[in-house]
Image (cartoon, rainbow, N blue to C red):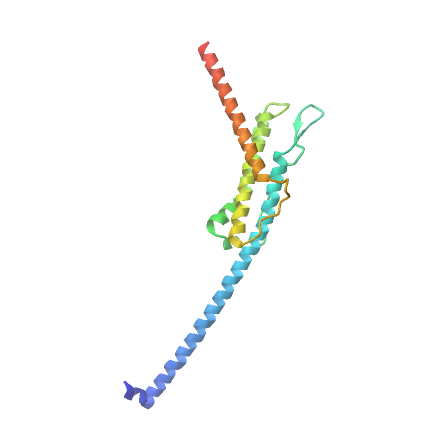
Amino acid sequence: MWEFLASDVGKVALGGLIAIAGQIMVFVLGWAKESRVSEKKRELEAQHLGIRLVLVLEKLVGDCYSAVNDQTYTDEQGFTRNAVPNPQFSLPQEGDYRALPAELMYDVMSMPSRLDSVMEGMSSCHEYASPPDFEEYYSYRIESLSKLGLNAMALIESLCDKYKIPPPERAGYYEPEQAFRRYLAKTAEVDQMRAEQQAETHLTITSG
């Protein structure tokens, strides 16, 4: 082996191997650097998208909060009407959503359709609600928008944790999560009372 390497042919072969090894090393180092740069770029793009999502989701939380706290008003015909408009929501157009983890990406991208489903349910409920107060409609509105607001807050928390984003600053008196949970508890209580009343009425009819 040493004799071969000491020969002219061996020296040429060894030189060629060294040259090839050097080229491979340069390629590997370049690829690793480019890979790190690309990965860092993807992380920054995902973080930027996360920030934009937190901002629009926080606005949705605020809109849901305003809607569930709607004081309503009575129109000239004596019908109860919304004083606060229903929430609207759309995702930022810029940004590659594929940069998000699969589960988080699904939850984020499904938010517009969740809101659409809520609006469709509210429209259907209003159609069959009892005038002039439309109590069933406003009960459904409070319940569904409270749930949507809590979902948006959970997404904000996930995005902030994932991308090290400072959580949104909220005024001391503004506590949407507590408000949403309080309204859901109240709605559940009312539903329970209605169910019990219906059960008593049914029992009275059948007994009579």
